[in-house]
Image (cartoon, rainbow, N blue to C red; front, side, top):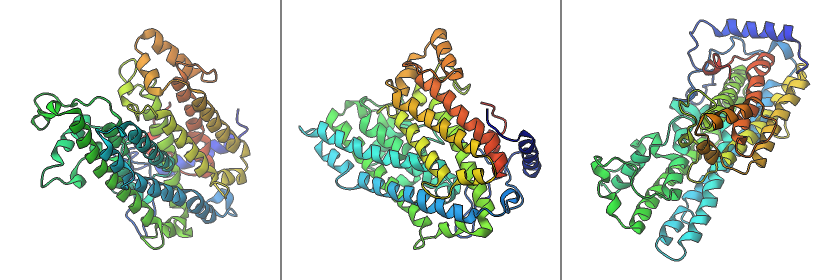
Length: 439
């Protein structure tokens, strides 16, 4: 059990509740706005955060250099992550990326080219997953517009039929990718287009746009999907570049806003909002808890169709990168991070607890031998549902067929600390979207 002064936690939590009430749980977090519009919370999975604390001075640790901590977080983690993302998505959209595979379709080199582009795609996915715990500022503005263009899984379900219709429509003279919905774009759509081995249309027979699709040759079907994937990849790279530019001094210089002393309290609130919502609602619930049926949002024994990457079955790798991204953000890499602020306030055991729990979840992922998709698919009756629930409740014992259920339990241990001790010690508000969620 954590060695923490519960009286102090209760007093701090009470103060947070008082400063956060009055808005009915709505409102947005105080993302600084000097050079860019206010960051908005994700449209579907992350409802609006609670009102931030009124004061931007941190009374419990007046000597701690909060602005300096934000500098380290920005310079050692966030901006490097966005740089890597921009580089990786540019490689995917380059002529040596998806286009190389497209030109190989129907030739003897097709299989090798697909394997090669899968590696490039996975690099882009890994880079995006590292940024998910700090989805604040430019990437989150305007209802996550840039984030959704890169990867929209946190907010919407992929629209397989909508993608099929876009593939057919791309030859129209007035086709405009920029007006297509988020469920037809991003890295998830590229996975569907390049690695889904089922080439028949996902649309119902009455959908006229795709009525002749199944009559095409296999080569034509692959080629048309690949052409659309190339267009999407170009859009992904453009969005990633825009995010990076927005942080750079040569661009909109959002970094200056994020790290300024006058915005330190608001930046901290926005950052902690992003961390908690991502770790709780996105990584824990949406990526593993709902697909395995642990979360009540899945109304069946399990919901395997809702895993993040069903065609490559790389959902575990995505969560691993989320956890690694969170750990790096928490510690600011080798800099002055949130862990140091918590320790400075007298709670090194909370820092140690979060790191230990994160490492335990990573060990679980590394030991898993069955994909989340396959595990979720196999949870299909009362007996397997019970086994999953037991693994979730007692996650320390690794189970081959239910490691994903156990992973949900291990991640809950992380988010329990984030939603109680973490917010209390840092004197920030709990995001509105998780206030009534006890699991």
